[in-house]
Length: 190
Picture 1 (tube, helix red, strand yellow):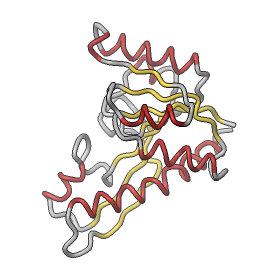
Picture 2 (spheres, rainbow, N blue to C red):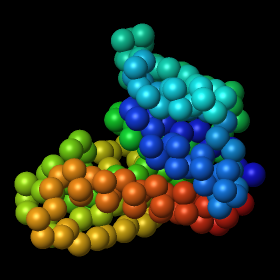
Picture 3 (tube, rainbow, N blue to C red):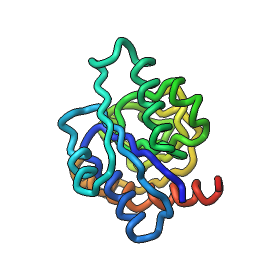
């Protein structure tokens, strides 16, 4: 059983979907911890409700990003993590973490990369008038959503759909496919 640490900055709905997949036995893994960078993030409540260990890393508590990422990497090793799973984590990952977990850090992004990297990818796609949107799951490197793409899941935007409807569809798709792709990755890398 693979040990994973989930990184998130907010609500944690993908974190919850991963936990549900583990409970349903469609993902054979153990979430050994949650890394968060916002003290008021709801994901911390989700983790507490499920008795999952958490570690809060606030940028203001460190002299620089490298020091913060070194502390995060150390925490992941204390938890004996084998995979790091980013799910709405809004910070770039740097060398202290990347060097310890090569090809074992995965992210989900709400666009068909390489289109619309970074923040508000959905808003960027809507502003561009995209008729096909989707999600990408990729390995993490030092860039902003630039890692090798593992899988993509497109869907057609329906006539008259507003941002809320598109986001709802995207999140539902994420919750379905992220655990499935994680299962495949972990089975291939036993």
